[in-house]
Structures are given as structure tokens and as C-alpha cells.
Length: 256
View 1 (cartoon, rainbow, N blue to C red):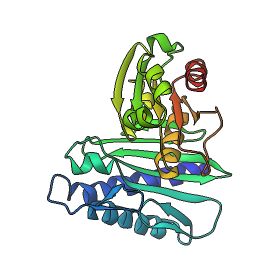
View 2 (view 1 turned 45 degrees about the vertical axis):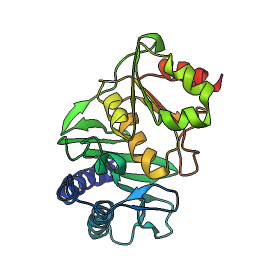
View 3 (view 1 turned 180 degrees about the vertical axis):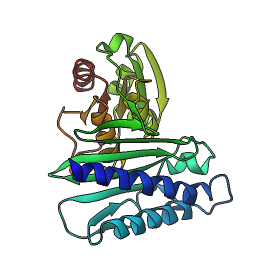
View 4 (view 1 turned 135 degrees about the horizontal axis):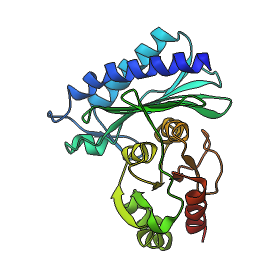
């Protein structure tokens, strides 16, 4: 527990410091290139990840780091997870809803996570057994237990409509209030009690592992679409819910 407290404090500081690196490029002219998976990347992604990696290595020399832009360095099972700009498309478009994710995974489970929203000035942090905070103040997920009244966020709906249209249409009719979105911010809203659930699709480990740590620390539930705990090997389809009861309804909906 003491180690997680220390690591969480270090991760919060590193993320806060890296905000300036990302914001220095925000809403500025950018060259955009496409990676092998057709996702965009900019110098902002690269310089921000490098700043985070350098800070992690200074704080924890020799520990393994797995990041979106520079892959994995080290072979330890326990590792830091980094997504320097979660929502590069939002960043490119000047939308302030891009995030910055840092996590720590050990014993094959997310142990701590940071969801930093540099343009919004919001830094969410959480660790297993420690609780979750927003800018240092405690946060908890809502007590919503029924999908019929839930504030439901549907991420990557365009991809779901293309790949799994029947499931996408069921989701589009679910919940008491629905919003379409992408990236990490809807999950942070569940952790802070403003939204109740998120269905997400097509994610990578650096997208969901830091987020899962924050959601779970706030009392929420985050799994894959089979209800299994998230790990490095998960398939990228995730369900986030404020309560187990709400999660169970979502699970039934996506499995129908």
C-alpha cells in the first residue's frame, strides 16, 4: 500500500509536469503522419511520451515501460503504461477532450492510474485500495443500478456500426440519456459520478489499463465484454459501469 501511495504521487507529478509539453503544441500547426494501423501521430505525441518516459526512468530506474509511441523497454512483468495523448484526433482538431494516461500494472492487474486532461485542468488519479481523486479531492462513482435511468456514453460508435451493427443499434436505444464520444474522458466522468456507464470498442492496453485503475478505485466496475478483468491480453472491448448491477445489464446487452 505504501508503495502504491508513493507511485501514485509520483505519477500525478509526472503527468502534471507533462501537461505543459502537450499544451505547447495544442492548437498549433502540426505535421500529421499515419502509423501502420492508420492511426495518426504527431510530434506532440512523441515529445510528450518522451518526457513521461524520462521522468519515470528518473524516478524508477530500470523499470519496464510500455508506451503507445515507443513500445516496451524492459522485460519485467510489472510495468508502467503510457498513452501520451489519448485522443490524437481530438488534439489535431483542437478539441480539448484529449487525455494523457499513465498506469502501473503488477500481478497482471492495473494497480494505479492517471487520467490527465491538460486542456481542461483536470487530473484524475486512483490506486487499488487507495481511492480516487480529481485534482486531489476524493471522487466516487454514482449509485446508478438500472440501465433504464443511466447516463450512458457510447465510444467509437462509428466503428461499432461498421463492425457490429446489431449490437450498436441496441446500445443506441439503451440508457436514460445517451452521449456519443471517444477516448478516456467519458470513463473519467463515470469515476467522478457525472456519467454512469461507458461502452468502448477497439482499444489498446495503454488506452484501457490506466483508466480501469481509476474507475475501480472510485468504486466502479470495468471489464471486457465477457465480464473478465482487463489485462494486457484483453481484446479492446470494454464496459465501464458505476455499479455491479448496472454492469450486469450492460453485459447482457452486448452479449445478446
